[in-house]
Amino acid sequence: MSVIADGREARARAPHLFEPRSASAKGRALRTVFSAVTGTRRLPGFLILGEKRCGTTSLHRYITEHPNVLGPLAPKSTHYFDTRYSESLDWYKSYFWPEPLVQRMERRRGPMLSGESSPYYFFHPAAASRIAETLPEIRVLVLMREPGSRAWSNFQYERDKGNETLGFDEAIAAESKRIAGEEQRLLDDDAYVSHAHRTFSYVARGRYHEHLMRLYQSIDEQRVHVVCSEELYTDTQRVMAGVHEFLDLEHVPIADTSAGRANVREPAPVEALDRIRAELMGDTENLYAHLGRRLWAS
Image 1 (cartoon, rainbow, N blue to C red):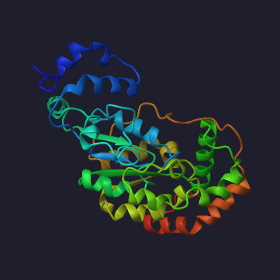
Image 2: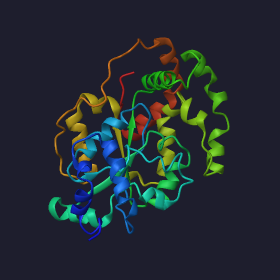
Image 3: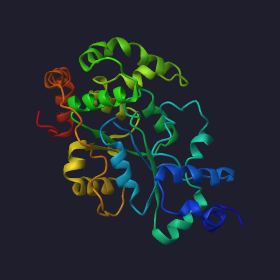
């Protein structure tokens, strides 16, 4: 009896993999167990596209806590549609559960939904078309955080990782030069990976309306759900009820709504953030007009 024919064999072969542990470690271990399995996999029915520093990790955790949702056999993202697109489709499929095993789960639980997330899918200029080609029935979620606060958090993250050596004002001033031409290179070459575009796009990532309109060129608007990051943290149960409805899942209240909430490490540079907000005001107002509501007070 094979692993895909009966999930009990996977448990018998490696029972330690089914004990409580971190999701990423368990996923990697299960991917190893299923590596010899051939046949179909349950590809994603949903993707979280980002944006970076907007709460993708928290939203991913909340969604995958649902008993009818399966995350990838990896950390939350494979990065297939952004930085790993040179890999084969079979490589991508290997990160998801074997279809016969999922069908066994469905006999007990009802329909199961698979998905993954990446904080770079929304900003990468080629990701949406790649996603639509590979997953034509996909439903996607996009998180949006107030652009100034998002830029500051993004800067702190890259600085703490050692990627950013400039001060905040200097990094913002250098951004356009740092990422000049990178978007076109990414569109021209599926194998091209841009460290600058991924890392130093503090202001550019906040052009939410522009990127949303680009997304709609590949994925129908009815299959796109926008989530306000601030509301995800301040009104988690209501926001997740809307997410579950969008994904055709029965609403299951979130047990622990503290995911991803970190203490503020240092004060934000108010004047610099106000300049970013002013620069992005036109795009932000277009976003409000499209959504029919204002997401942020400022």
